[in-house]
Length: 75
Image 1 (cartoon, rainbow, N blue to C red):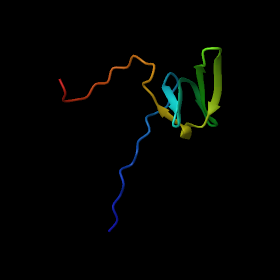
Image 2: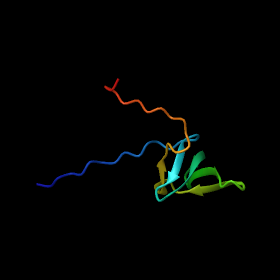
Image 3: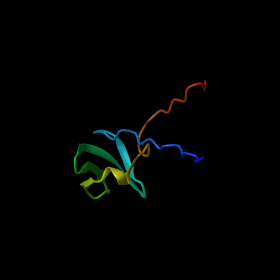
Image 4: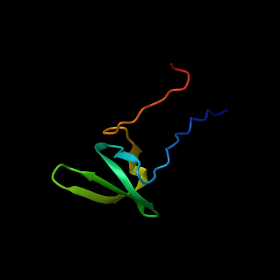
């Protein structure tokens, strides 16, 4: 008998999503998603940067957002 590990579910990455490299770094906004990856836009304080990155290296981020997290059952 083998024990199955829980499956990690990656939230859908879509235009407007705030993401970050899994290794850390600047918060980025997804501009577009295509077959070759996600076009991400961010600022390094000197200029606006844009790069196509594999979705495998991205994670959702709340850094730099005004997101409100709602946890069901907590009042």
